Image (cartoon, rainbow, N blue to C red; front, side):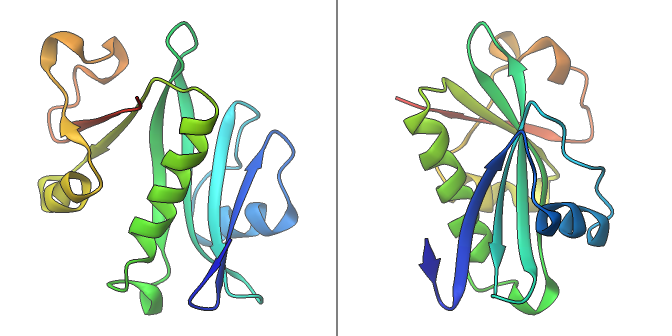
Length: 141
């Protein structure tokens, strides 16, 4: 998918050299086989990335990991495009929920994307003790 001279990509299990390089550039570890990687490129290099890691295979829940946009591309809606692309792809795969952990300065960002604060009683066990982060959830219908 192309928008504003950037192309959106989706990879799983066998990751391209571009994804590996983008992870190194953003100081993220190499993607694991159970992750889904969504990224923007400008035709020369990757300029944005978000990774989703499976939380619970019984419910097909996923966790947003490592959302990053290159500084010169920030504040232009590219993070929202990337997240919407990821959510759309996960929707087509019959996923149940996508969770995100974020500091409070990102509340408006996640809220605009359709995420809601996760209720403590329905929050996955792995995310319960994240005191410095707010846990967000996007329920896929």
